Image (cartoon, rainbow, N blue to C red; front, side, top):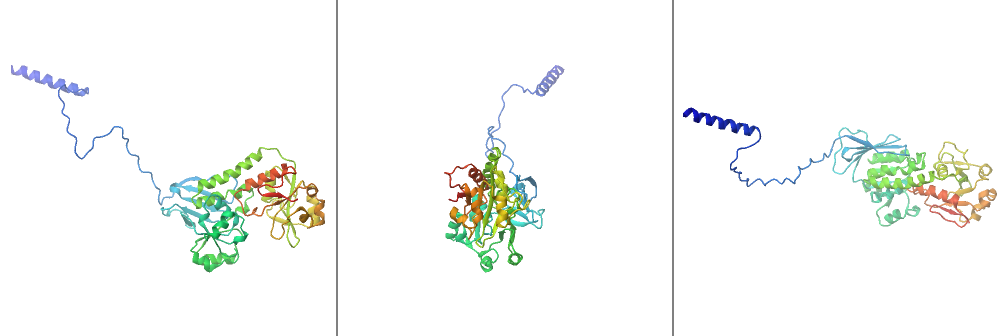
Length: 399
């Protein structure tokens, strides 16, 4: 009897083990333990919380290079965490540090450190100011070397009237006492910066960024410098939009046929000196982008800027040009076609003058750099305009 009971008990144990191995449990009441008072019951609909994104504070991890389509005089690289590193053709390096971030130990030692938000800038270039204004960061500029009455950008004049931007004196002789009192730590100058002014800035502990946009070969290269200023001032997206809008004009013109028209560009100073834009200048390139031919294509080949010519030499080259664009200049601005012709007898013999195709640039033409695409488009509209069209955005017909 005892052996039979033991056999039955052993069989029961073997059956229980077999059921457990198959994932089954013997039938019978199962007691569920009471939930702990300190642990809320789990909700199967809740997902596991995501890991906190890495801030990359103080780290130097390359992400990507900003694509530049036309600009050749600077580069811009983006690093993890929002750091950006800019390098200009003259060897200047800028390290842009996002607000609240520390300077990475691995960053270039010779870089100028620009901590965001960046402000209280001295900007001694009107085209640069136009780029900063175009991306909505004019409030970062507090000092200028252009007097209020010489500005043609309404937003700048309004800021000066409100006391937000102060005239510091000329770029060659700025008021150093006022500059020191301002607390400004960065000056954006053009390539005309003199050694003595640079030395004074160095003594005051003011870093200098030379704007080299005027050295860009392609007109849109000048506009593309907006990406550098947008990066410095935390307006990357706005700067990209400014550039894209101007590039769209050029893309649209590139799809059109050439006009077959020629254009001469020049001006005469109040002292009587005649200067024309060189064939390698960005304004000559603008004529080509607009679908025209530059009439003085053999003057200053490969060179930017202007060249002085004798009146007869100019006439020989420009006499058959379909259009003349006269550059508005201080002391040399003609109000009417009669004023223009009175400057030299040979001007009345120009084909463009005989046909009423002498146009003049507006006064703000060289202060504004953010709308060069519009300026190129104006040149195209000029070459397509009938006699009833007398005014474009940046050009107007002398009558």
